[in-house]
Image 1 (cartoon, rainbow, N blue to C red):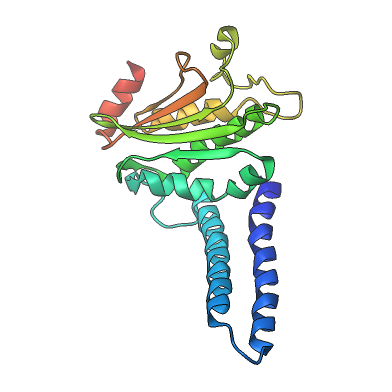
Image 2: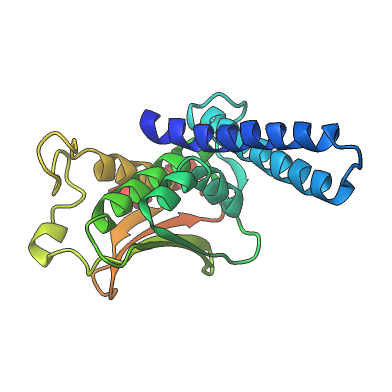
Length: 231
């Protein structure tokens, strides 16, 4: 994660450094090219915004923002966007196409940082899965159900063997090589989903590898939620 974040920040910093040198040269010219200067400044602004997005995502991801411990109404698109901001440049560097299928602005009562952790885990698994493939893409889709929000992560893989799929959510089970996975990511993500009154599932019926996170729009009373989990 640290390596990926270093890349996310270093890339826009490199652009900023290059563009500052470019602006400096433009300012030394006898005839000021305002159009070129405006273009360079816009690129600088986008690069700064990129770094700000990464930093903001880190603050949320680390639980450093107020009000993230309680269930509060959160915009699902914003959660997805902030999480993607932590790894988008990595996708570009690895030649992975990122697709976002977005519904209109939808909200769910959740713990923002925990949902970011679930999404980050699913995206990380998808990146590992598609790297050896000739066709590399990951699609995040947000859909509205009657009382729930459905957030899915699909990658260009052809699915997971049925025998392995049965054990995916079990603690310490991993399909990765030794030293490359703890086997805890999906089981923790599943626990987070259930603590929100939702669920995380592998979609065995999908053509490609697809995981679905379902969250209620509104949290039910804690006692009813506990009874739902026990049931």
